[in-house]
Amino acid sequence: MTNKQVSEHLSCADCHQLNCYRRDKQFPEFCLTVASRGEADINAEIEKAKSIYSSEGPDRQMALAAAEIEGLYYGKLTRVEEIIAFSKKIGAKKIGIATCIGLIEETRVFTKILKAKGLESYSVLCKVGSLDKTEIGVPPEYKVQQGCHESLCNPILQANLLNQAGTDLNVVVGLCVGHDSLFIKHSAAPVTTLITKDRVLSHNPAGALYTSGFYYKRLLQEEKE
Image (cartoon, rainbow, N blue to C red; front, side, top):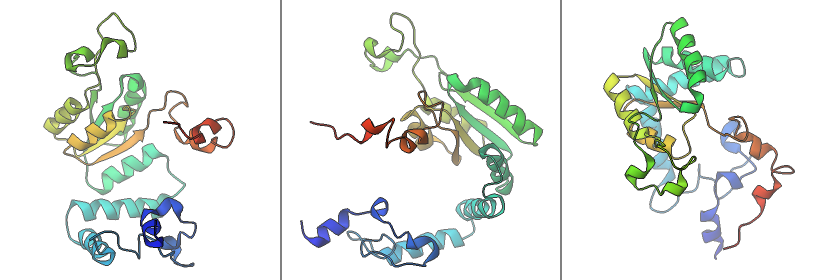
């Protein structure tokens, strides 16, 4: 590959300057802040995003609220408290919760906290609809427990029911990888996450990254085709 082709394959994870934050270093030539890729002109893309943030509407409201919360409470509030603060900043009064059945107790605690802070909540469990996995073509051997009814996770129905409930902000509590993607895709309200499921690491997926140099060193082993 030519130097240009190599450069076009580089992205933010390859950068060790991070000049985009404080502008106290130098932008590398491949930096996505200064280098256009394909037919898109990066300066035009920057201005397009800036225009959205600067124009009255929900995107500007959320951008300002998120920045204010970061500036005022960085390192001071828990994620639960940040969600409450964000909700109030954007005027969200009814909070939808798309919850995993395995985290229903955590969801119950969260709903009590929301109520105490003057916010209404409406939760929908992942197994809503109670459709057996085989009804959509999942082979029986892929059930966690075989030989019985096992409902599939139903993030599309979760989203649709929260849409019908008229929620202002939806919160993901432990949806599976992929199910969370479908939920976000079909949610009418903005979505944020309270808990990201990781059954192995007690819902702390970053733990696999922090221990990749020793305990989870196998994660860095290249797979052979």
